[in-house]
Image (cartoon, rainbow over all chains, first blue to last red; front, side):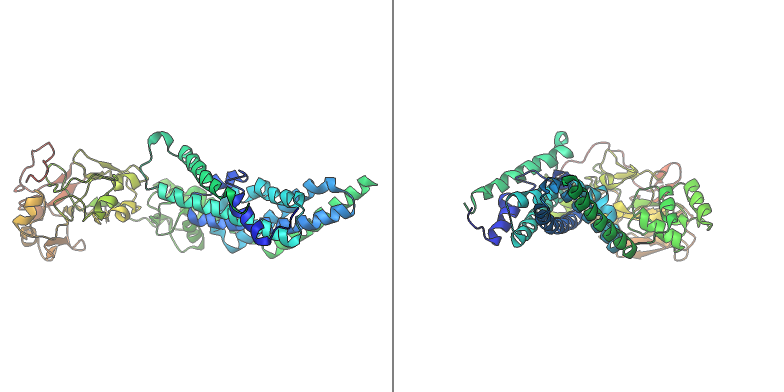
Length: 193
Length: 288
């Protein structure tokens, strides 16, 4: 396998193989918290934070598990680490900004079971990334997730002023827009090859 | 051996994380008054902002702190307000009910439209294009932004495109005041009966070319009213509600019926000399 540059890993995770729009991971907060720009960007920041922390932890745990010859514990260890990180983020947000805590609502604890985060941890292990590469990968994945969320929130805020036909109002038009957004991100797929 | 390794490593990991979380919980603990949740549950959850706070929760916090009295919430019922007052052991602090009132009566049967607007069905949209198509630059555009924004179904557009406020349902939340691009709505105590239903700053017959019920600034109401009850300012009568305003005298000689008496039961009453409006259809474009 040829050595990938950190920059390429970042672009790859954020644009070319965007977690939400190309891998369809983490769809639940993507549709749930993308109603408002402000909440969307902060949710993106929270998810990125959890991704980076859990990615570093996953790197350390993977080394440890290989050393003690117990790679079958990989999945459960990752899950435990992610759940604890989310708990920590929840405490921090509740302390720093109670208003944000309420507006994120159920989607904050739901980061625990966000497949995008477990996806980052598992992908980086299977790709055999080192620490720096893991960081670039998780940061790229987080940036890509935030980008998708913010784009969606911007579109949905504009949509509030649009004359939407009655049949597609609400969830239907949101999913249609998500589809078109995904279509545009397919345009990145030739990049870097 | 494998089982031992698995147990030890996973146990160690979870123990480590648990200790971290316990420390974080101690460091980041936030005390919240449990009464805030209770009071919030008793509020109407309209999050309308009529009380002057961003939503019901900040209002509940202010109530618990004693900065506000439950009466400031104009949406909850009297029983609800009294329940909160009893729970917190404070005075309910009743305020007079206020309602939104519209300073325009120029429906499509009396007010001329000079240009047809075809676009987004919204007053704010129409107002962007040189103030909308209506002859009168101050009048109601009639696309019903206020009807759409009202969370309490208190506003409905009548057949001539003028919003009618259901005073029983109106909670004085102020959403319509904010949304109207012509600033025609304002909140008034329900006991205010004298009302100027026009905002045109023009004077004389020029007003009538655009609208049959506009104020021509003739000043008869100001002359008939006692003392300083009504003064003319920028070609409009201004009612001084701190004076004795419970009188129908000023509306009697109004030639167009722009100043009205909002009767509790019958709705707006015009003076005896006001021109009767019998047209039931829409005015044609540019017709006056």
